[in-house]
Length: 230
Image 1 (cartoon, rainbow, N blue to C red):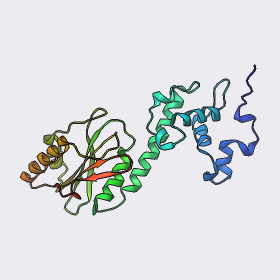
Image 2: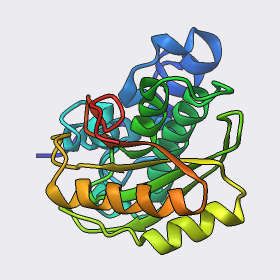
Image 3: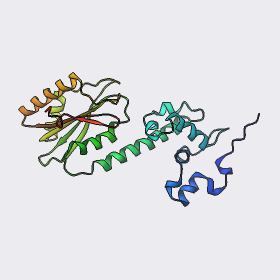
Image 4: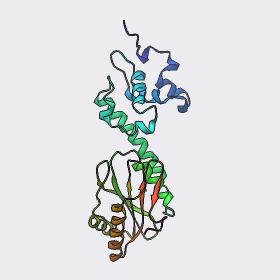
C-alpha cells in the first residue's frame, strides 16, 4: 500500500509550522510543530511533523523527559540523522540554560531555596551525578559556579583539596556545595555527610565558611544548613 505522507510545503500556508510561528502567537504553535521547525525537513516518506511527533513519544510527550535524552537517542527515530539530532539537543540545552540564567538573577544569596531553584535548572535532567560548588564573596554574591567532578549514575567523588584550592583562586569567602541524585531521592548518604564535614573543617582552616550543601532531586532538594547539619 502506498504511503501518503506529504511534505509540509504542500500544506495550506496557515497550517505550516513556520508560518504559524511568524503570523500568530507563538503559544499557539504545538510542541510537535516547534520541533518540526528545528528539524527543518522530513525524510523520504515522512514529514518533519511526523518525525517530531515520534521524537515526542520518546519523551512520553513531556518536554522535561525529552530534555533528558541524548542526541544519540534522538537518532533512534528513523529519519533523524546526526545533524537533526544535534540541532534538537542544542535547542533543549539552550532552553535549560535560559531557565538557569533567569533563576540566578538574585544578586545576593539569602535562602537555600534561592540556590536550589538555580541548581535544579542546571542539574535536574542529568542522568549522572555531578558535584557543583558556588564560590561567594563577602557580600554573599556568587563570584563563580563550577562543576568540580562528574560521576556515574549512582555517585560522584569530589576532592576537598581541589575545592579549597579553587576557593582560594576565586578569593571566595564562603562556599555552597551541591550535587544531584538522579534517582530523585534527596536523602544524604553517609558519604555525603562525611564529605561535607571534611570540606567544612578544611575550609575553616583557611578562614572560609561552608554555608550549605544542597542535594538536588527531580522536584525537591535537601539543605544541610536547613537541617542543622553544618
